Amino acid sequence: MEKTAATAIAHPNIAFIKYWGNRDPELRLPANGSLSMNLGGLLTRTRVWFDPTLAQDEIWLNSQPLEGAARERVVRFLDLVRGLAGRTLAAHVESENNFPAGAGLASSAAAFAALALASTAALGLRLDEAALSRLARRGSGSAARSVPAGFVEWQPGRGDADSYAFSIAPPEHWPLVDCVAIVESAHKAIGSSQGHLLAATSPLQAARVADAPRRLRIARQAIWRRDFEALAEIAEQDSMMLHAVMLTSQPPLIYWRGVSVELMHAVASWRREGIAAFYTLDAGPNVHVICLPEHAESIQRRLRDFPGVREVIVAQVGGPARLVEGQG
Ligand code: DP6
Image (cartoon, rainbow, N blue to C red; front, side, top):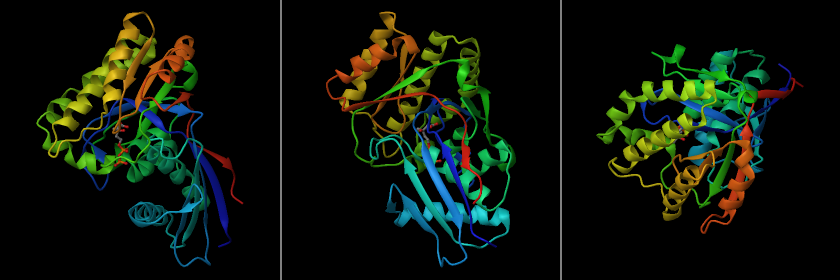
């Protein structure tokens, strides 16, 4: 087989209804459905080729060779792709993020969505969107949601076959803006993959999971109706429920810093002033402030002036994972 290459890009995403805990960690079958928006403007670009002259996979991230557990995770994912294609060739992978490394923005979603698309295309496989989302899910759960465009829901499914994400509205449906207040750039002590394993140790996780269909229904309808206040209320409640589970896990996961809490208070008071903005936090201290485009300038200014905020990264609603070159 001659050397074939493919390049794909994918955006990270921010969840309004969060994924936390797996029914099956190996298959990454989530405890509950989740809903997110892709972050346009931020992207991972990944080029892959399978090369008969390589003895083992070569994986580069932001011009550095990947090593240790991070490399193993990608190799295991490539093994899945090789299995699908019935091939055994080693791969060369080069991946770059256009958002600052170490800004604490989760990059595994964009990384595995781009890798799923580039690696299957490089082997001549043409997966439909659901199959690609299922495959990306095996690398990182939230990567399932970076495959489709715009506003995306990941249905938990009964098993591997129906646990995938689909678009519930295209990017142009509602021009929301995410202003991410970066409060800390250090790598998190406990990453999401370990965090998911602790979810079930919190007595609050069962209640969070049982209530997820209600939150999903409200968030979905708020997006369809472009009802900002309804989305704000349910997304903030969902973020608080995620952190309630984290804080009550054994051992507890305390991702917030003091400034994260100050920012939550501030955003809530800005909304009372009439500024359409709400907060949501993932497995880290950075605060995502989602707002309407007419308030984006004012939110950015307020966040940049906020004591303890190091940087503000701005994203609009993003498109799907896509190939940027054919094979060659
Ligand atoms: C808090 O998808 O990063 O951001 O499947 O282990 O890669 P892995 O976990 P990951 O978990 C995301 C957790 C979250 C919430 C969310 O994005 O839904």
